[in-house]
Image (tube, rainbow, N blue to C red; front, side, top):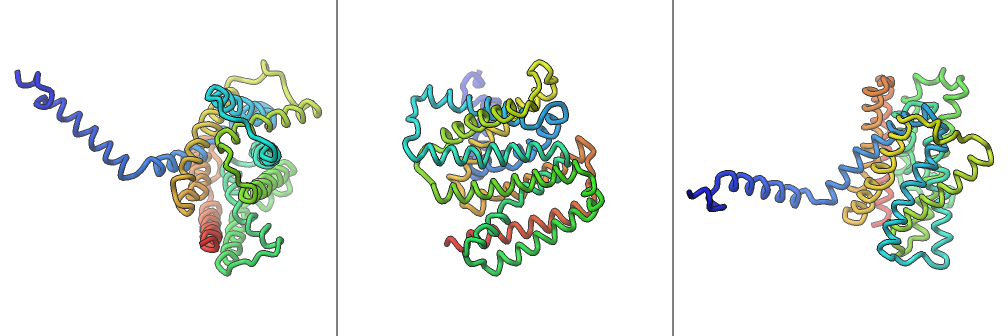
Length: 320
């Protein structure tokens, strides 16, 4: 029969059309854009996973275990590939970034979400560009008019967000969670500026793995000295599942996708994740945990993100 001839088989033709359509779509969209979409969604979900995990175990222990496993996976891969280790001053940069980005920023944000909603933590986490501009301002750098207006708008948005939370500041745990979350964004801002200043040609993926691994050792040392850790056998399954999700999607796949997008897309495109992550976290927090999704959070979040866009746009324009 003529169906025995592959190109005359209707099923073969249909499969070929679908394959060509998918291939064309991927090529038209581009793998970097797909990687960016992956980052936008899954980094937003990590706030939910962190929130669930820290309900049942110390937050810093969760952060340490997550980074130990994620960092070990990176190291095993690059050791297998016989990738050269960093040399000389590269180690200093890696250690400093490990402390700023993972021990402090990731550790504190994980700790902070134990006391505040995941959506609120994500919105605060998006404020990093504001701190970058403020730090640069204190360094004596000129502030563009657009960045100035962006700062004011973002501050106004934050005020709207916290309008319904004013009474919550009387609650010590809530206040502590806010302080931790804000400190996390400040340390990430310093890490961002230090990365730009000390940018090196060393493999960014290998560097990321070393930073994660070193940060876990620092956190384990702190937990051991303060006695805040619990035995591994007492950690419930739900927390282990959260850690597994954070390792796979938060520390490995998403970081790989993020660096890939960063290397292959213009800065103004690759930075979109910063505006989408909080939206994902707020919506999922409301759906999964029943966290409040009030009008003040919706309006304030939108205003804050608009201000952040203005700040980011001003920074990019200044580099041109």
